[in-house]
Image (cartoon, rainbow, N blue to C red; front, top):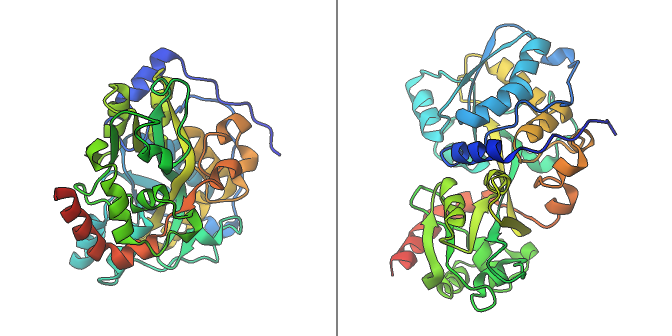
Length: 370
């Protein structure tokens, strides 16, 4: 195992600044000043080249993390210049491809977004997996995208709310007598997909028997807690603010948001058990001008050390099984790809949702308004 010093803990003043920044961005501000990051010193000749690659991401703090984690290293080692752009979205990819004005060579999207577009047309290039490191698990590979970031949708709670008791799963989230207080859950107003999996696990469905989802059973389970859900959120800032302001005692949340909250001193914690393991992916728009360079960058960014470096910057996990060797144990312990955490999570079935979302979403929205 490679030896690297653990990142130094953030001070309270810095952490409060992180929290403020995190409330308006999809990721917390990375600790870019931390030393002892693992260094990628060489790459295969197959990943070297000339010219540029234009990459669309989420901008802001995520772009800062990616710049330090792998954009700078890729430029230095490959000879290919990286131009980063904010505002990645499937809608923009669709418009670019349909007009023939493809300004991006690569975009950070979800597997679901890529697959959903491919249902309606030919919007992405096939991935050249001959370039990709063997350490990238098969579950992260699909024909038109390469998953490159692991995160989790989990249960979060205020640790000062239940007299020392701690929820351990969705049955506890649903148990308002043992764990009193208002709740918040993810809704559909922002175009998202409801947390049907959580409702079913609360009703006793085993994690390995969730798919195909029983929608009627999920809605019946939702009905038992509906009056206690005071907010159906659609942006990651909302549940964090609700916990901070004591407006809820429990909420669903994206795990990356919690690090800033905890660093700021808010008494809150994650219950990883029965969380949903989700992923972001690289997609290469059809007709990308620098398609070959995009393929090379996708392969580089999912090598073990670049994947470890992104985990130093933000509390999300790796898709490369060898990355854990380069991440200090105290950092790894808070990542969704850590072996002890990953085994508690449920692998989110994007295939099922893409096939069924058009039937599920209207039914959920009708129930919500009833």
